[in-house]
Image 1 (cartoon, rainbow, N blue to C red):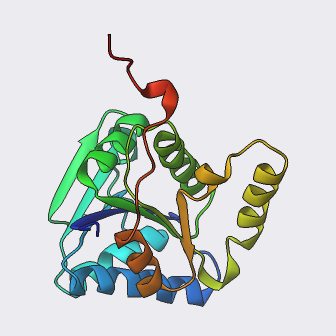
Image 2: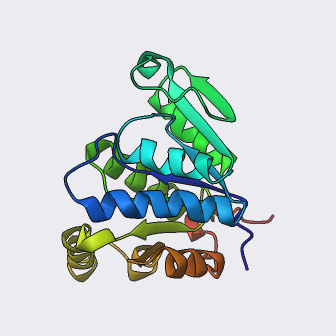
Length: 196
């Protein structure tokens, strides 16, 4: 079993227009607080990001925000966090979130959310980390993406073992249970150093 003491959450800086997504974001924040899981996220007080963080804080959970310098504006950044880390750029932000976390969960979002998800799962595919990566498929938001990934596997562009690096569920409790039970793959053969 993997001990999830801290989890990075990738999600939208917009709220969108689906109230179920907003309520699930709040539920995830509360769940983290209830289970003493530190929330690591992008430090915004707006959008789905802000909903997860505020809910975690309101339920006495711990929240760490990581934000690049150019986004650190009063109307964006959440100033009530336990810790706020400022990075020089977006890449350093993702690297720091990775360093601080035992796993990752992606909620609905836009281009930035997709970019974060795919970079972190690519790192796993390359053997750069062995942490569980969860996709919370709220209200079928990611159905089309999941179908596309399956098509990539069928067409030979994605190995099934790499597709299985993405842990998918529509329910928070079930997703966390799957993540805790995650068994990392063996190191990719191209990264193994031959002994002489």
